[in-house]
Image 1 (tube, rainbow, N blue to C red):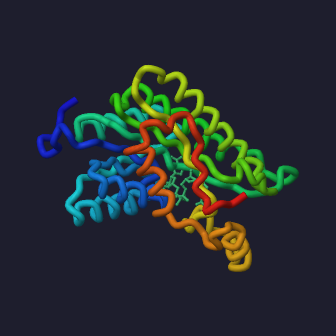
Image 2: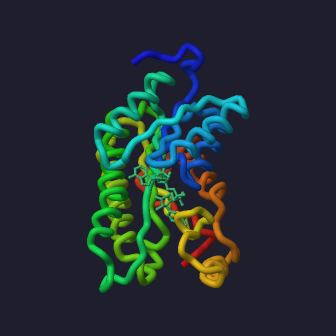
Length: 250
Ligand SMILES: NC(=O)c1ccc[n+]([C@@H]2O[C@H](COP(=O)([O-])OP(=O)(O)OC[C@H]3O[C@@H](n4cnc5c(N)ncnc54)[C@H](OP(=O)(O)O)[C@@H]3O)[C@@H](O)[C@H]2O)c1
């Protein structure tokens, strides 16, 4: 592992999976604002990850784009290697990569079930495994669930089953990392204005989701990035928790 001479040893380093996505982009930019050097991970949308890297550079920060399928252990091992080689180590891993397919359980195509679980469950497991081996003491691992693990909406069966697994992986890893000074938590957003939420929904459906929270609006990616920044930075006494960031949705 070689330390990039332009990265001071005191700079904290984060890898954000799904950095090409709506929430991942906001998390990457927020962590850069908080002084992190960031690996911006993508799967299919390299251009969007490179645009985030360019935005970071324009703000005077440090970032690189790293590709790979979160469910592929070779891809992710290589992605972690690249971030360590560029910045000297990894302190925080934020695993936002995820997909959603909605259909009633009676009608769901089982190939879609496998696809959702491969990315959300195996992907979270692979990224958590790499993070558990590599994150430096004082660091944090943040996985992504959803508030629908509480609200239990129809059509969310495949997706919520995968996110319930994410919550379990997270809470067990927090206990397994006893003595390492590494926190492990999950953030569970409510409806947040990104392609994952907006695609396939008409205006009335979106307005109804917005009205459902006491704050009567959708979440913005920056709202979720605030919760991640807390867990990645000052929140050293928050460990083994699922943090619901949803404007008070019940
Ligand atoms: N938006 C919401 O309302 C909401 C609510 C609750 C929870 N969440 C959770 O929040 C997280 C981020 O969601 P988002 O709204 O930001 O979604 P998004 O904009 O659709 O972004 C999803 C990200 O996941 C990446 N990804 C998908 N499949 C992948 C794979 N196999 N390997 C690696 N990366 C993969 C995508 O990469 P490419 O684009 O490069 O392929 C993209 O960067 C997800 O885990 C989601 O379940 C979202």
